[in-house]
Length: 429
Ligand SMILES: [Zn+2]
Image (cartoon, rainbow, N blue to C red; front, side, top):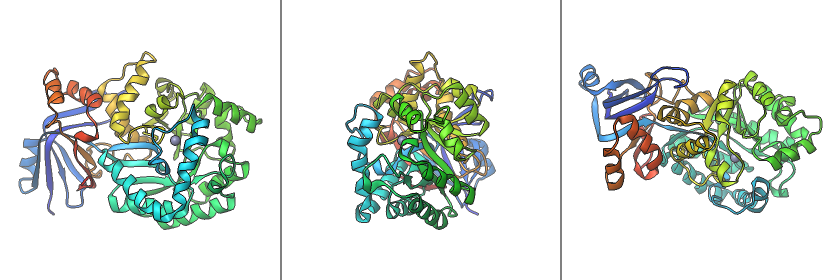
């Protein structure tokens, strides 16, 4: 079978740098060997790989970096054109800017091209795996799954579910929600690259009957995910307390309806208390940190260390439209700054981990993607600084390749991603 060797400067994580010594592997003259199906055979020193596979096709990326495809743990498809929207905080922003924008996807004629633009935008930004809040409308969600399958994006997505607290035309009854989820699960969840997530927007937009329906779907379809928001803003948390007076805390609302488990992705978790973190960890939930969004909405500073101390898996998400860019790469720089404000300095290994292998582990997809281990999908980005004279000069002043990578996290972006590959196929063209 014909193999392909991609030549370049390799960097990836071999494990969680907080647990594994020297987890960041950087190889200056590296090669990534893929089989004919785009599966990674080997990654390592160029000379050794070319010796082992002398007949392999060669794609020489010159001095470019080859890095694992990025994992976006939380992003909203219907908010594609709702970035940089007005609002004084989460609840005001939702009512004023977001709900009106999400209505546009009721029109299937508008939703289908939007889905393909959304998927292409993620891929071009280096994201090869994403957990996505879908539309309220079934045809728009079908278009999203189709666009991901065609484009080559590994996707976890589901219909955004609400039955109150939003404009009438964005609401579904629990029965309608069940029917849409079941149809999408049966149609798409068994396809390669595609996964379904039951997606109640948050506790405030779901009645107890809707949350019960979500729990019932998880029981009926154990392979699906649960994706929702938690503890994003103080105003939201207060309102949850008023709406669910029996709940000891926000997480209790989701726990009561059986929504917590290993495939549960909780976005934000900025203000979660110790009892909630303990409960999340016992239930083996994953958390998604969205630093750009948290800064934009003024939601707060994510306590990464507290989550790590509780042993929680943490992904990073762009949370577009509250996030203002589509690239997880840019989010890593925001993530660094949010931790700096709390007195924690993240190293380059930890940053890259959060955007790649850590994200894949959080989403339960680390057997498929996240680093260059043999057997995983050939998901990688080609990051090149040629044509950027400032960046090239800045990198020349670095003492090591690790320093260069640190600079790139803060100074590079999607415009430096020369190519993005998913499953060994270029998907950024
Ligand atoms: Zn969100």
